[in-house]
Amino acid sequence: MHPLDLPFTRTRHDRAARRRAETDVVEASLADPAARTLVLHRGLLAVAGTHVPTAALLAPVGLPAGQWLFLGEHDGAPCLALVLPDGAEQELPPGADAWLGLREVARGAGAVSGAGSGGQSGGQPGPDAVADADAEVLAHGLAVEAVALAGWHRTHARCGRCGGPTTAVQGGWARYCPVDERETYPRTDPAVIMAVVDDADRLLLGHAAAWPAGRFSTLAGFVEAGESLEDAVRREVAEESGVQVGSGPGDVLYRGSQPWPFPASLMLGFRARATTTAVRTDDEEVTEARWFTREALLAAVTAGDVGLPGRQSIARALIEEWYGGELPGAW
Ligand SMILES: [Zn+2]
Image (cartoon, rainbow, N blue to C red; front, top):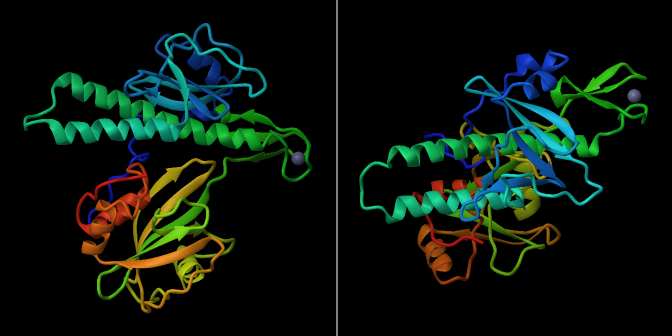
């Protein structure tokens, strides 16, 4: 199987981790006239462009006070994020048109690439379109990094050991507690998400208690402490659907990963082989689990009886990989 091509995973920039140890990495970056900055406030990004909003890459001059994060470099120019304090309302920085969440930005980008691939009558995209797409990937990759890092700072102002205040160091890539003389680093919470397929090549999808009627997606859940990814896949599928996943070679196949910084998840996608088909949901997280043939899923989606996850999600990619092509409709 080819690797999945997943939204949220394309990047153009270099994280330039070697520079984080420079004590003045932020100050040195701000002094560079080529530096570019994303601005965040209350988890939202300052975006530019009203038709297809993209995270705005602004010159870091004349911006309000806030926390600076070093994101890396692109073509030798530093890339930063400025996180404005949560407390007060903030004016949009010059050059930005709106505050928007990362998911909404991703949705806009997906709409554009979809329109381009469907409507054109052949031919290559022009150089402007390529440059625009490159700029969009650069901005989006930086935005995913910035949202994830800013989210960690938001909830880790205090030391996990002594409870005392910590300060950001290493360009925002660590927090330091002076009492314990200890650094802590940004957290990422691994979650497994899986396309469970039985020996008749049917796909298992679940409906979560919290969702509107008709919404179905792949099963998923967080990896527990001290647990392997393969065991997490088997446990989550059994808990949520009652279906057993095999423990033989190739029964749990890794397919790709996607950062999902809402607030700190890393989605690890798998294809899993079911060895049983009887369904029994936990009725708490998942209230319905159903096997679909390709024909039945296409018919249900086309009729509007089933809504599938959005095109920016790894769940969608796993479903469409099993299906063998694009499916219509998304919530
Ligand atoms: Zn401490």
